[in-house]
Image (tube, rainbow, N blue to C red; front, side, top):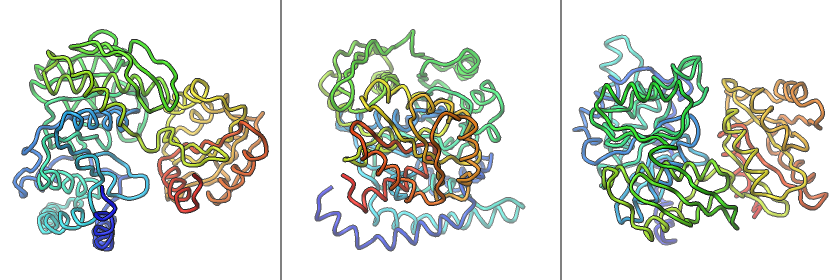
Length: 456
């Protein structure tokens, strides 16, 4: 995006902010409605914009956003005009709707909301007549994204599920390719208390005669995906048998990977992301693109694939936001993600000591997160994000002290003070670093703070 364009678009920031404020007046993401009828009615009134382009639909517990962004980057390297929906955002809501590699402009955000708002309000009125809640924030945002992609227009949309799958509002779209990142326990109060229940809900994105690609799954999750694929007469390709990450080698700025795809072998690809889990995400992304472009029968063009992966980004995933001292942020917000973070810190970095700045939301497994991070932590600086769902710092501090009694644990009600003290601590000796994690809202706050204070 040119500097001139950014300057012009800044004139529309207030318009975009007003549109976002109207969205925020709706029921928040913490209380999704398990229904599709409301979103389906809204897109129907708009002429079903989600049917005007093919869709790759992605769900799972961890790795959804990174995999989505890699898929989008590869498709864009092929010359396709892409749409990408991810959630949540880190700093600005524009990040959730990406068109051709750039967050939606303020002008397009505001204009598209103005276009769809009368139809959204009409659906609100119909729902009220039936005694139902109006469209939620996420439902309305999903409609906005589908309309924005049709307006752009895009050649293909990569759509990340908000929560679950079967009743997630993104599921009004029919994905030609359904992609499953690893499935683990998360959002148990909404999706079920077992991996089998969660996998069954997520398998709801599989549509008739779709191409389905999946990361390696635990047996009970895989069984649900196999059942859903059989019922819909879809093809299922699973990591480990149909495709695989053959190797991952640490490299400056990321890793070099080799992947056995569904249709081809791809050697020595540079991936500018840290952690072997990102190598597995890349293998899943490659399999998804193979399934989309050639139904799994044609190998990808080597230099195009290399360009797509080399230019892939995943903000908030082991992202460097500060130097002298080093400050990294990572969106790990459940034990599965925290284990991947800990392993990446061991493998890809040479820090002697690490301060973990930790904040966790109330519906998350804080004990599991602390247990995963304790082996790589030298000290915990416990705090809370600005979210009203955050565990209070004092309560989280007590939990960390109990779960990691051998560690130095400091508690701060202010995130800014926690990070400032952690940076001072890291500056007092060489080869120390600060890692901020535990909550996506927390790292969004830190990214904004780092930018405003010029930590890099």
